[in-house]
Image 1 (cartoon, rainbow, N blue to C red):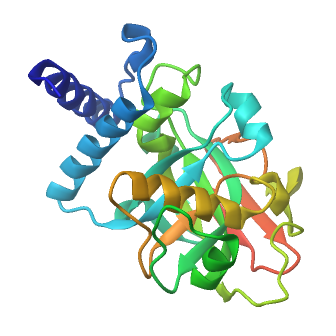
Image 2 (image 1 turned 90 degrees about the vertical axis):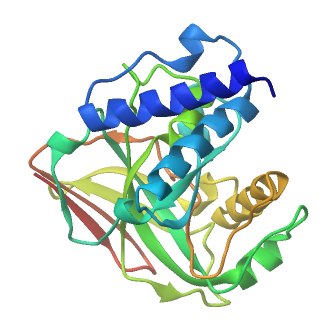
Length: 263
């Protein structure tokens, strides 16, 4: 990789971090560089995450995004992406987030996991993925973009750490053998009014398949999912705008509810 490419990647990572810090969005990377390769976008993401780790952040897990047909249609893409969860992003249920610290936030409900053992390799099976899960829980992911609008490509999203901003976690319960995550139906309400529903099968047919996909993607770049990490497999519905002075709640039949307050 030539020095010019390295400089462009470093400058793009710096621009994204500055945009978030100063709350001033930047032009999508693909506007200036149409056809941006996904591999290059992941290098931008990696550079930005590395800068955060140097600043004291810790890796808390990973996310797969754009794994439902609804989100793929909303984003105009046909493949998932992935990002890194850092410790400052993760909040317990009932937490409040200030709308003023976010730029163009949206929210989505997910069936998420905490791993009980490592999950890595090129050909992880669904059975291996299920066996690696220690606990399952509902999560509300706040996605945000540091670009001027949500009219972005999957490469832009990848560079921007898969648009992840915050993750609110519900109470975690063991993943039992009889639990059918594909059939788990979620209801999302805003200020007490149900606004959208979705089931686990919206995520690649079963949320566990997102673990398989993510383990394979991380393996290709020399990484893997680790014991104790949280994993978000993607939304079961198209994302919703996140407004100030609102409360978002997700519930399902077999998992404890999760709630987020926006100031």
